[in-house]
Image (cartoon, rainbow, N blue to C red; front, top):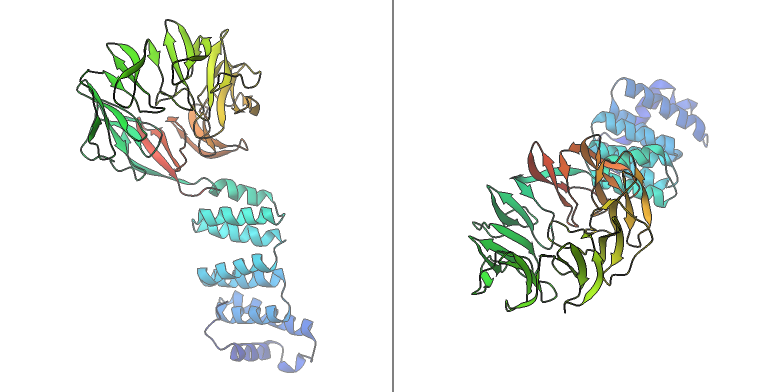
Length: 431
């Protein structure tokens, strides 16, 4: 611990002599000596002579190292304006008294005040590991665990990150952004763009083709395609003459045509013929259905985490990528899974959440007017007309009342709507 610059012996001898007289201190009588130093320290604190107070408190701790005495020393440094020394003492308190809640609370509160939110979360987590839990620590955790900043520019439309990039719309055109929210392919804009796996499917002036990470045309066809999505399972969904087909890695049509088709993921895709949906594998073999509807996300996937919501008998149910039903619950509505294993579902007019087995993990609540599936441990919920975010403990951890919100990706970025435009928020601290 850093010492005050005033010579300790001079300060102690002089001050204690002034107040009580050195002769009053009896050999081996620590309690009397401690009382004398505490009295001098209290006097010096009143007089705002904090250097002398620090010296006295350090002497007291040398005689009797208690939580209370360490707290007095910390407070002297705080009032002295010595933030570094104050923090050092608080950290030492937690180290020396690992079962005492007061030490964790004071240190966590200090980190919160100086906006070191990740350190605040770590302190609360360390307290919990030591078996120390208080309402104040819980409150500080909720204030600090999911801090965020607004990043990037304003966009007319913004998608979640899927793979290395996110797709946004600017002045009616689409482009890819990297995780720094800089254009991944500068100067390149598209009429339509899929998510990006090894390549991305884009459309420019009615011509659809695949591009590589430099934005160069990677694979094209002599035959015109009106729309194209990313390649997966050696299959990419495409639109030709208003019908959906699947093309392979050399742009040959191999499946279709259909009235609608999703991209492949987890070895499965959903296709629609007329008013009936079915699930198919990469060979085009039906593995599930027919269904009335299939839930599809903004990048044209029906399957994430190997789970799919399909509609049968006017209700949505959950199935896996082989078409097997998961759980026995029925839902009025549902949101596709994203990067997490919990998805938003609607029952009796209320939104809640299920896990990958179809079991309810957060009971449907009247408070949630709408909901998105979990991503990165958080889910967007609409409460009283505004969008906030909850944790898996069903606590509101980001209460910002956005106009709209989507899902967090694993990189800590999430699109939100503010003032009529889309922005991204980025988590600056998390558990």
